Image (cartoon, rainbow, N blue to C red; front, side, top):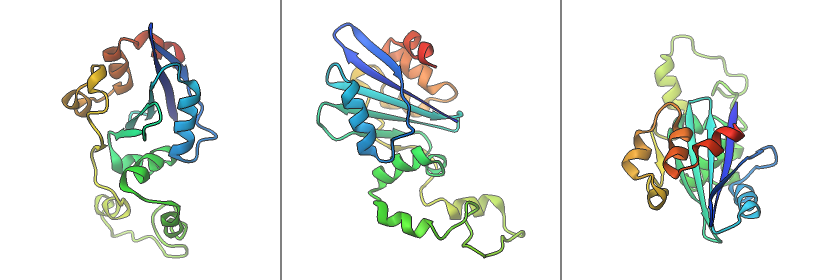
Length: 175
């Protein structure tokens, strides 16, 4: 299950809103959604999937979005996480054609699963990105979350980010 919140910086601080991602298929859709909600230039979108990974997308005016993903390998296995990791890795829609040949378990259609295979090595072989963070860990430095802090977040990462931004009550209200 996903949770996504949009934080827009205003003259009076931050405003938070629950963000519905059902119609978001590409990063450009997410950026457009953020720009529509913006009351000022800076919008931060926080996305998490059941404490497995979290992502931060920052949009400043018409600049390209800046992205950070806490665990690229886990994120790449989910639809919204894959959207972020694909953008960071420079993949386009033509790369998805190769993935259509694979079942959800990572085997080609009709290919039997190998029971003698080590699950850890199979997971690593299926995952086209390295484990760990990916993207710009400095994207929130100017608003109170430094690189070291962002890289060390665990557990309720979105709550800790919101606390550093001074808007944890707003984030909890939309959860």
